Amino acid sequence: MGPVLGLALGVSGCGDDEGRPAAWDPEPPGTSTADGGGTDEGDSTDGFDPDEGGSDDDGTTGGWSCTPGQFEPCGCPDGSDGVQECDPDGEGFGACECAGDDGGSTGDGGSTGDDGGMNPNEVCYPGPANDFTTCVPLHTFEAMPAGYDYPPAYMGNENYRPPVALIDLQEIDPATYLAPNFQLVEIAQAAKGRYAIVQPHAVASLQALRDQVGAIGVNSGYRSPAYNATLDGSATYSRHMYGDAYDLDPIEVGLSTLEQACTGQGGMLVEYTTHVHCDFRFDPVDEQFYGAPMAAAPLDPPHFEATVVQGEDGRLSAPAEGFDEGMPQRRWVAYDGAGAVLATAVAERFVPPPGTVQVQVRVGAQVQRSLVLTP
Image 1: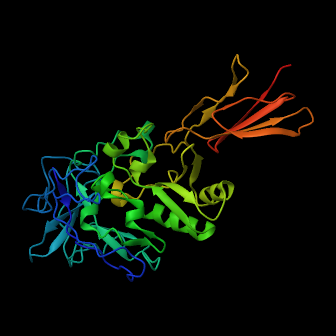
Image 2 (image 1 turned 180 degrees about the vertical axis):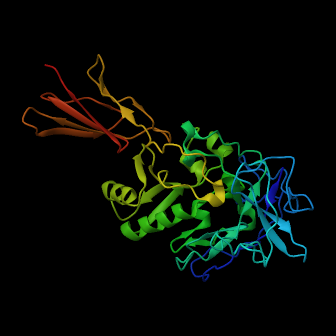
Image 3 (image 1 turned 120 degrees about the vertical axis):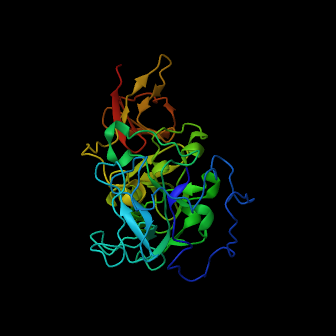
């Protein structure tokens, strides 16, 4: 089933063209381009029909359930567009709200009621002026496209609930600035899935991080579930699939400074052997993509664990759990009996030098463990 919500077209509120890539030439749905804007690597065009809806002529929906708080377009008696909201019980949509109704729509899908004017047909980002006026079309799905099969919420955590809406990267200029220093193409690419989740609050946090530490490169942002599954060591619940995680390349600062900045923005930094990962899993996910929160569920922090093990050959290792984006980096320090540093190393395994009394290891910049060596 294709998207049942997708009235807005184009991008509104874009800034100037200085420093952007060449002009974007979008192709119709179902076509493929050499630059990754097509349907390769797990992204799908199956079932995409922006004219297909799920509502009956009387403005109500029947025959299938919906997500409480989800919006859908509907027709008003005067021919304008209104919106209808999924009932709290999730069994169908309520009456169509039209211009002039209490809490009704503006006629273009934007509500003037208790939702503060949010248009359910689009999602807005900080943009070049950092004022959240850069808006792109948002598509809500009755059933997700192929390649977007999300697992059930992890241990009931509402921040891991499956999404109900996506943006279509084929209808948005990849050079669009979602924040003063970040373009869409840096955060989501069609080669990793035609559709994407890019949470506005995470983009704002990324920009705040950049404002604090200077230039940073984004090596990886959103990944569709299908694309994520093709990667070595990919995790079932990788935050990259949820649109609030970034693999970063700090250009002007060191790891410790970046870690402090990431956590200072409410995020979590994990150091892996191939990259530095910062995500914002602790912040509530944006309802434009995920619908209303589920019933109260604990937002348990991620559980990282590691131990220090000495092999028969004297080499030390630090088996770890909970690092779901790859192999965590291990930083070793060997001390003598007076507490002086004898050696340091960044490696999966470590051989302590003669005279070592205690060894410490920091795993993934998240867990620190120590081992006192017996004579």
